[in-house]
Image: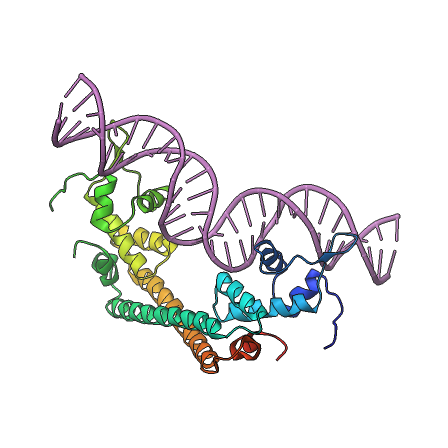
Amino acid sequence: MLVEKPLNIGALAKATDTKVETIRWYERVGLLPAPARTTGNYRIYDDVHLGRLSFIRRARNLGFSLDQIRALLDLAEDRDRSCDAVDVIAREHLGEVDRKIVDLQALRRELDSLIGQCRHGKVAECRIIDALAPST
Amino acid sequence: MLVEKPLNIGALAKATDTKVETIRWYERVGLLPAPARTTGNYRIYDDVHLGRLSFIRRARNLGFSLDQIRALLDLAEDRDRSCDAVDVIAREHLGEVDRKIVDLQALRRELDSLIGQCRHGKVAECRIIDALAPST
DNA sequence: TATGGACCCTGTGGTCGCTACAGGGTCAAG
DNA sequence: CTTGACCCTGTAGCGACCACAGGGTCCATA
């Protein structure tokens, strides 16, 4: 386990493909612990921060909410606990994703049939407008 | 063309399955014209408002943004114009929906394989946590 | 006529996850 | 010693609402 060089916020941002403001935001909402500061009041991060932020970013890329990530991070600390709770969070999220896909697919079908009806005439006889308007 | 009874905000809300606050919000952001008021300062709506709000709600249910709906409503006023612009907005939205579906499906696959690896042991050897943690 | 409760009003603050300033301070290279 | 890239805090904004608080109105019933 190598100990990396300390990073300032810009370097950490680059290393994790995160905006500087986003890192400060994670600190504000308690996802990332407040790091030490230089005499000039610059934040300095170590590899623990780097690891934690990488975790957060990967989980975000998988669509987990910050609350879910907070829970996952808490669980990850407790190395002896059963990982069932982790599984529950992941499955919950998968369920949400599935629901969203189904909803969007239904939406897609409706939109598609709407668009298929367009005869490219005047607005007055536009099927899309008709379908949205209530007097039909 | 029947002229409906004037509605107060609560009745309009019920008629369009919209929250009262949402109707006031649409007025604030200029989607719904400010209606007349009673002497007691209550909003009173007519069937034009009802039609417009129904349109907005249907478009919202199809996932159009308020900006897109504003554009659709503007186009709908101009009955002689070609409806191609309407088609463009709808197709644009369809494209966004398609993109979201593709993204969510990729996400779903990743999440699914993550969850499939769970051996229900201790957090220390949890594959889900591992997959999110950076030291892998 | 009084009263109670259902409705309405405005204005403000919260949600989620950031992003974008403004107005300053710090630091390292040239 | 100056320049310019970085950093700091704090605040406001995004989209599309939702949820109050603290008041006013309206109507039916006692």
